[in-house]
Image 1 (spheres, helix red, strand yellow):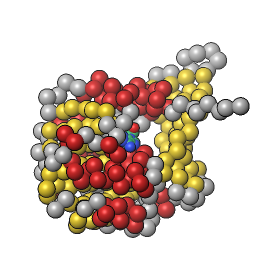
Image 2 (cartoon, rainbow, N blue to C red):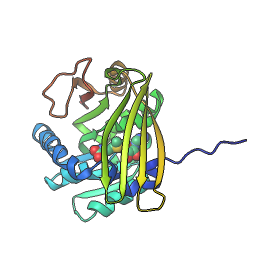
Image 3 (tube, rainbow, N blue to C red):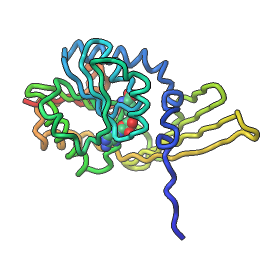
Image 4 (tube, rainbow, N blue to C red):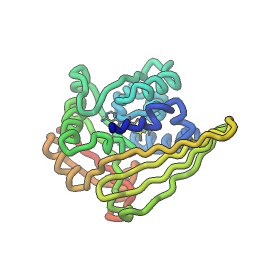
Length: 252
Ligand SMILES: C[S@@+](CC[C@H](N)C(=O)[O-])C[C@H]1O[C@@H](n2cnc3c(N)ncnc32)[C@H](O)[C@@H]1O
C-alpha cells in the first residue's frame, strides 16, 4: 500500500495565507521592523527571501527601496503579485534560496530572510547553498539579516498555541510543537459555510538549525562581522531564552 503525501495548507490555500496569519494586523508590527532596518542599513536595493504573500517586500518598496521578493511557492508569488504587483520599484519572482539565479549576483545592498523562512531549506547542505546564494546576491559591503527561530527556547514536546484567526466563515487555529530539531506546525481550518462544517487539519514540518550551525555556515560562505540579536530592531542581544535569533552579517 502506498501512502499519499498530504498536501500542505499553503499548496491548497495560499490564497488564504493573509487570513490565516492576520496580515492586516502584522502589517503594523512589520512596518516598524522594516523602518528600523531601513534606518540602520539605508539600502537602495533589497532582496526579500521567503516573501510569501508579499507584505514585507511591499513595506520596503513603499519606503522607496527597490525590492525583489522571492519564494519557492508559485501560489504565494501569485498572491504577492495580486496583492501588491502594481508598484514600479517592486517585483516578485519564483526562486528557491538554494538555487538563486546568476542575474542576482552583486545586485542587492541588503538581503533579508525573515520569519524563520530559512528552516524551509531542510538540511545543513541546503543551508550552505542558500547562504552562498545570498552572499553572491549582495554587493560588496552589503548586509544579510537572517531571522530564525531559537528552537532551544521551546520545551521539547510542548504544544504551543499560536493566535487563532477568523475571516468571515473561516476559522483557523495553529499550534506548533518542537521535537528535537524539528518544528511541527499544525493548522486547523474550519469552514462553517457548509452544512455540516468542514474541518481540515494540516501538519507542516521544518528543520531548525542551532545558533553555532548558522554562524558556522555564514563563516563558511564568506560572511564577516557576524552579530546575534533577539529582534529585528537590532537592539537586544541574543540570549539562550530569546525566542528569535536574528543574525546580521556583511559581505566584505
Ligand atoms: C513564514 S513564511 C515568510 C513570511 C514572510 N517573510 C512574511 O514576513 O510575511 C516562509 C516562506 O518561505 C518560503 N520558503 C521556505 N523555504 C524556501 C526555500 N528554500 N526557497 C524559497 N522560499 C522558501 C515559503 O514558501 C514561505 O512562503
